[in-house]
Image (cartoon, helix red, strand yellow):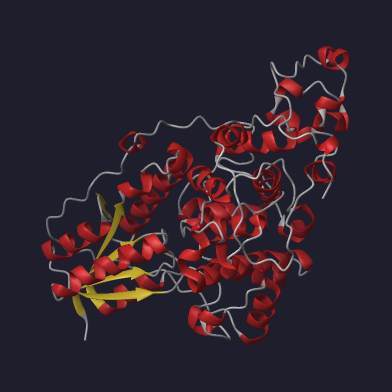
Length: 477
């Protein structure tokens, strides 16, 4: 038996390839109405006046939705776009267009699950069915070698068990055609950033990559990184870089909105291994996808705990609530060049390297003692590749309240700077006021004499701040 008409509610799955929800809807119904709903709650302000979705994230999302609509049109379909509360808007559309079922992809965290539950409650009363599909991870939830509530707390054990006992399912071909109903439907307009009270961000040209949202851009990035520039073979060696487009894949931005599926990337890695090279770097790309899975299943296992100050370890700490210190960090004004350069990159582009994220997070929670959740909220607002499970999981990890067998996750900032930016090129890229300081000295301007600094055009406390933490007096971790 087929449904006459179903709604496919797109969320963080903005693609046509490897899309279980859309594929099943096309097979199980005569007509499909794809819908995307911009939820105003995602653009509200939280602690410290931080907007949940900032300009870079919002721009990337709008581009991804626009590209999804174009790709649906190419298959004979279209995308209805609405602004409003999804658990109200989607049922109203289902009633209006006499849809018999609503298909959507399953999420795992508190806010998203509440929306899903409220929607299901509403439509069931109206006799409308719902069908949900799991498709955000490399390993399907049904193929895990353990129940989700027994997900190992340590990543290494999780990875080894999955690699040994689970298989990655084959990705799903995109539909050949979308049977969109021939009825009068107000499609809705793609919103502008101003709709959400945001201004068009001015993306710094010195950023690593011009990020464009959407499935087409995701596939092009993969083709460029794997095949055209042949970067996969050295990924493990270069992934901790700081400058340039190809030190790492940057796939996380498109994975976050589901513009590309992890299984698609996995299959491209396999193809690369057959045609080009198989080595530690090709494995490491899959290794990182497994990390992403791990945070998602840990979030599903622990629920709301990942948002609590004590995290999943129930470790109570007296975090500071110093707003001035926090904003010095957020605005790249800590007086620690390696921290400031990374934060300025984030604020100017919506992106930061993995190495940068670990260091700035460690500085905020371990050196300044600020509540780690403020840092997680700021990343949520700013990062183009914000993923709720990976973001909050990584912040817990750094704060010592997550999944880490080590008690202290402290990063020695100066040692890290020496390892990854020894000559200070990254600092010069983002902190031009320090650019004349040669070599590694750029990482410790406060150790130079006033005369030396003046010669370089640097005046501490004036055009660059004094350090919030004097590492010369601090025991190195």
